[in-house]
Image (cartoon, rainbow, N blue to C red; front, side, top):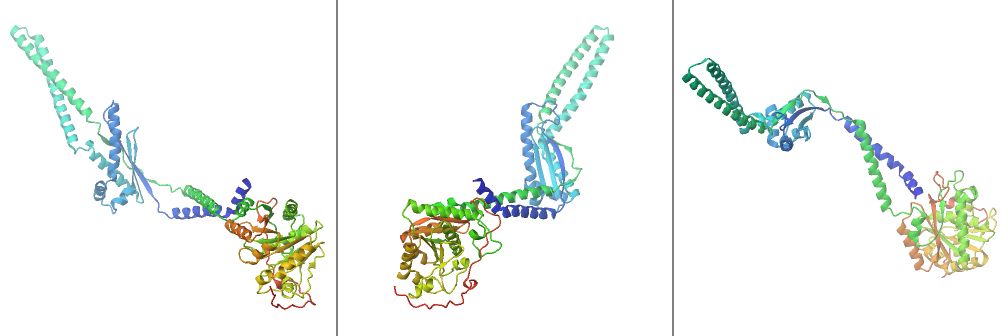
Length: 538
């Protein structure tokens, strides 16, 4: 699982690096071209904390609710229109609303009015104007009935305070006069007047107490500017932070794209995918390899110590072992799904490896559309399977490979337009039966599925069929359909082989390179003469 995860990371590393880099670059470019912005803040205090030195809990709660109410006023169209008319601004209410930000703090009952814009003088004027309008909208503004009532109460308290001073002065005067008066009648009169003044003074104090209480109770709904907008500062655009955030977003998006692609991808990536797609055993996975010196060489000969050759040997061993479990196979058809060259590569390398075990192996290139076997073994291109099938009198002489003892090869021969007719003929069936008697094992390559019907006929005539699929280029449903179609014609599926596998141990980082072989690349034997193509009776 970890190996597959790292493989996916390596496969999509270009996207995982490109999208964050592109997102960060675009964000940095756009942000750096934005105009310079400035901001300023006006602070107001709301509630009983202005005048009341000891407000109770209910007053504080009421003040917090009032602050939230005042914070909504600058968002209303009439309020914004009034600010625009007052300052003669060339702005719409919507544009002005975007410039104004309000932040409330219920613990301190401080309301922050922040204005952002390109003109420092303009934003300072707007911030102070907004604060002034909020104050005017509160009882502190002096224009509401509550404010007028509070002013009247305050005036009445002032009058009573002056009356108290006059009454206290009268009381003091009467006391001094009483101390110097000896006349009984006069003293009685002074005492009566002193009692009246003291009564009046007590009543006045009670009235003042009520007025003071009313004034304090009216301070809950109050607002005052505690810090006007004076300082204007430049807004930090935070280019680096925004670029990092954009890069992170780009990385997240790329991960989502990769996850979605891998989830909905229908291609064969691992041997497990091949098992689920083909409902057949997997004989092995061939690691990626490269042939830098000669693209036409076989890896089993050019690099016998490579991991790919070890993988081919494992597949060959399983092929031979399967014969011991079930009835022995005298002929095996090796075909690929979607890729013509893959079957030829696997068949040629397997043929050499099986011949090294001491068995007599015949490799037949029955791909009469895009043959490749002759290019690997450098056989004449003027003689081969089509020569034998077109001319019953033609000699049947597979080419013995000198450097691979026990291996013989029958190339495809000259290209023909009647490939299916030749392969589906009785002559082809008889050739297979004869070869099965002469050799220990006959390996046959055929055109890829599902492009040509030749492979279905050959699959019904051989003992087993081996299907080759290339990593990352074959759809699972294509493999499944190929297996089902082969079983429909009675073919026995030997197993599946995955090539260019990332899961096979020891795979190389360099990509495998294979050049499609063409007839003109093969050496032509000087004394070989082309054979005609008469109609073959079925």
